[in-house]
Length: 185
Image (cartoon, helix red, strand yellow):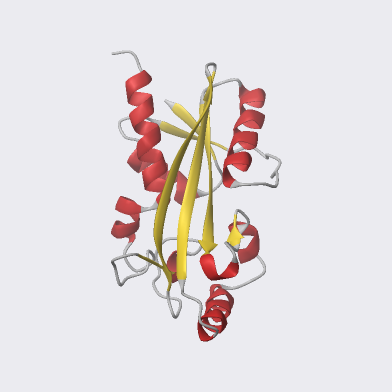
C-alpha cells in the first residue's frame, strides 16, 4: 500500500487504476504550493508531506505547456484555470496562430515518491496540440482542448486514449515498475 497525497479525485482514480496491484490510498493534506519547476514543486510537496506523516507516499504535479506562449501556463496550470476559461486559452492560441505560431502543446507530469530511502522522481510527457474549440465531456483540466499527436480526438472526447497514454499514465507506470522491483518477493 502507498499513500497518494492529493485532493483531486480524477488523479486518484487514475493512480488507483495504473498502479494495480499496488493499493493506493488517498491522503489529503494542506500543503504549501511552492513556486518553481514541476520537479521542484513535486519534491518540495513530497518532503513536506513525508515530514508530516513519516510513511512512504507520493505526490504528483503536472502542467500544460503551450509552446507558442513560452510554456504558459506550465506549472501554474490549475491556478490559471481559476482565472481563464478553456475558451479563453483557445482564443490566445488562435491569436498566436494568426501570427504564424503553431498550436503545439504538451502535458508533463512529475511523480515524487518518498520513503525512508529518499526521494525519487518519475516523469511522463505527451505531445500534441491545442484544439480549435473546447470538445468533450470527460476528463478534467485542459483535457477538452488537448489533442495528442497522431490523433484527432481530445482527451476529454476519448478518456480511454488519455488513460492509456497520458503524461500521468507514463509517470505512474514508471513509479509502478520501480515499486514492484523494490518490493520483497
